[in-house]
Amino acid sequence: MSEHVLDAKGLNCPLPILKAKKALKAVPAGEILTILSTDPGSVADFGAFCNQTGNELVSSSSEGDVYTFEIRHTA
Image (cartoon, rainbow, N blue to C red; front, side):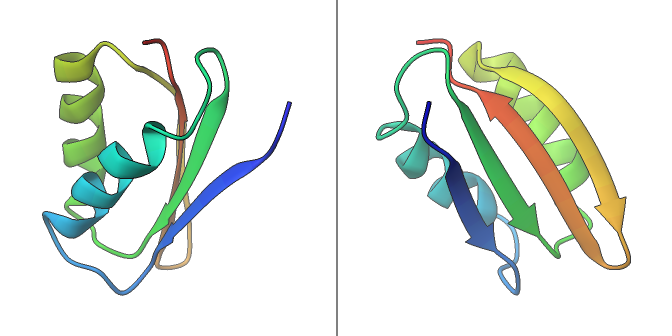
């Protein structure tokens, strides 16, 4: 299993979601994409994104002003 990381720090809505959607295309089904973001709105955005796309939000955390999301690609 490879490590897939998307650094979306410094980007504002909707760019973290758009870049994650594009990055997930390169992630094999069952593997996890880790996204780093500094946009506070991304907390709600990635939850909604996973609900709409059927991908699994494995974890969501924050450290300082950086939010980390782990999304399992299910499609």
